[in-house]
Image (tube, rainbow, N blue to C red; front, side, top):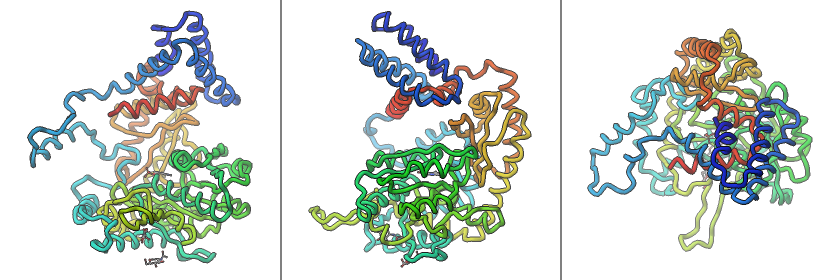
Length: 530
Ligand SMILES: *Cc1c(COP(=O)(O)O)cnc(C)c1O
Ligand SMILES: *[C@@H]1O[C@H](CO)[C@@H](O)[C@H](O)[C@H]1NC(C)=O
Ligand SMILES: *[C@@H]1O[C@H](CO)[C@@H](O)[C@H](O)[C@H]1NC(C)=O
């Protein structure tokens, strides 16, 4: 659809001269035609030419206006799903609703989809909102909903909870067993992204102070989370992205080639979000030690699973502070820690490093101020509820949960290749299983699954889809595989179906060479939603 709108739509109403219009459409069609084929060695080169073409068109009389208008048309199609906005509140009710606001919320809540057992990732706690662990976490939250760790004199319970959450997390990620000196320490943050932002910022400032690096660069694998792009943009660090190896793990040699005198850190994921494979952490550690640079391990997804999987006997290579070159770790309590959304931990090998995370202000008329992370006021309730989750489950709980998760993921891993036309990408180490097809458009399979109520993640490079297995899925593995089989058959039997839906958008997103235009469309999309 994107392709249709961009090219044919553009032919429709042109406001610049017909000559440039013909040239433009020819260029677009040429590139789009070439890039229907995903794997071309000269993709980068064509990509830059294509971006250039779009830039040239922007320079033509009326060209910019025209492109913007066409971009808007794509946007309108993308956002056509958000109907009924007329009923949204645009100002305060003249007369407050009082307690009846709850009824209004129940009404609005009806637009949410059933999520139980259907979403990849998203909800990690098992069961429904009103029972079991869910209820316990919610109760803990309510008990401390009014607290703010910015006022430890009033609520000393919150720093205690935070310190205990950090200490407990560090204890199963090698803090007690690390060979070199120093004491592992850290802080809680609002999520994986903030933990990563903090680790990157801290590393940048540490490397500036200790090594005098003022034009910092960081090296990540293509599979590392988008939070590193965010960190690079926010903190003015040059991001160098290395392709992954054939097994989809970080390619150590490729990363080594990108190291130079400005490199402050390498990133390893354990596992990475897209394909659920663990990067070669020991090799990357050796590299970091050799060049005297930092190594961050992204355990956002794996932190609350891998230590327990290892105990259960799964073959998991070392991934935490026991590996000598690891300087920082991010680990999400709000994923497999089964805490409330908005809880994560960032850990450092020692206090020498963590010092650079804090911001101290001495000249403010508001008084002396020191803050550990991005936020000022923080929700004490989230910290308390994370603590409640960890204390209530304990080692026994997490071990039991990990066993269930690993078995469910294993059955999915084994079941997918039995479906004709599908294969599993790489060798998933944990609970994320990505799959693709050599003969069918996998994004169409994803849409057929969406029609059956599933919400999976579409990936690209290569085009694929994944499911991140949570406790929500352990009882529906067979249903998932049955639905997937039926979806594949449906797409095979109905080749014309889904030509108009999201599949072509993902397809174009994966293959369109002009990344600049795609970035613009993504930003416009975000800007348009409210
Ligand atoms: C989820 C995730 C993140 C980011 O976490 P948020 O909590 O969504 O900010 C980072 N890295 C990996 C590997 C993840 O799975
Ligand atoms: C988080 O940072 C603050 C610094 O403001 C510190 O006082 C607090 O103890 C830290 N939390 C933990 C668990 O170390
Ligand atoms: C645990 O917490 C205490 C008190 O906050 C702190 O002094 C200690 O360094 C922590 N230990 C570890 C291993 O993180």
